[in-house]
Image (cartoon, rainbow, N blue to C red; front, side, top):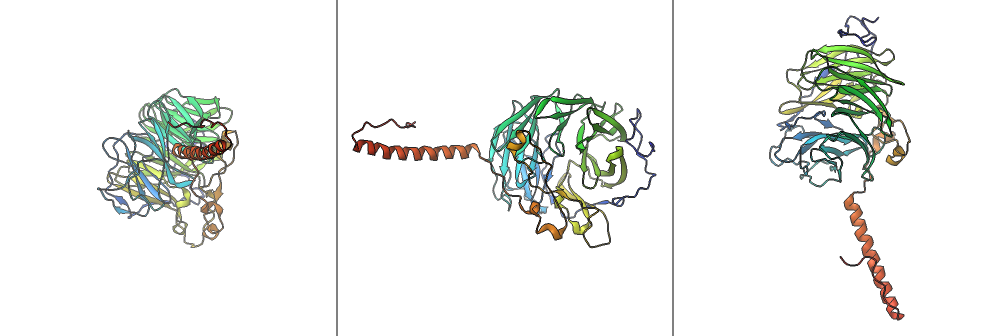
Length: 465
């Protein structure tokens, strides 16, 4: 059985995953299909980053835009396919350096977070109907680190909690509601990836020093560190469950490989598998609903996908989506964005040289009815815990929702994604000015009353500046 279960044992010489087994699986015939409705005439940024390079949700698609000076982010309405205007296209501006990472708020599709070379973390609010003018003033701006930021990622369950990483060799966790740093930990080397565990208790990251690290940001002393891949190129990490992870990297012979890790009392590698001789880093994405693993490489034209058997730490190849156009960026949309009528089990965005191509992964079925076996409940896009509760040590599993159209009208998770409340510095200053004005008015009345009584006036609480 060790021949066929690719991850059952660690091997000194990685072996290909066998394709001789025919397994009973609902996803054996999944295939990828590129949409003809693309976002064309883009000017994709040439800034080198370790991020996915593209993000999307049910409302928008975002990419870093090539521009002189500070970084710009193009946020395109999802329905606005076709040729994009090269002149006057509204952008998110206001950055004094390149944008190295960005991510939509999983609980509010109109908010996007940017991590920048100018050391600032910014949160932007986009009108639901899309940008009509360029946006230069963020909802909030935080001087997050001493050096340029490399990663920013939202917590999967807690509202307005995010983690950032920087060239100052630190990871910080932020409560965006209060704009306060709540946890910080030092790291040994520059990060190459950063991911929250599915339940949001832990953070995993890979470093330039060829290590995989798992930390509890609320207990900085609890750290698991293991050597991961021996190659010198970038390594990436993805969670398979709260107790299992997968990394992608390179061997000493520059072969691309993946490793699976078990997380118990210790972090243990339970298998290694050679993928190919490609040169670009592999970006793994795991769909815990379907147990499917996708491997997309920067510079690759293809996307491989596998089925994972978590109980035996095994993966089995399904197929690959292939084109001749290399990817400059690649990421998946939230599961709630799939079209169940087309039996679409995943939808991705691939950045090519001059366009963004939506890709559907379809599980063909003849039946028209909702297929519950390929659509278990997915993440709902609503927070299950507040920022303050999580900071104080609370934990709750992320909320889930049904994709069955018959249940959508009664599914609270599908309808309650509303604006998250953030009190910005500008808001606080405005409230302070209003309070001072109210105090001044009351003191003026009090002064008049004291004069009528022949009493000495009192000095104002807030003298004129």
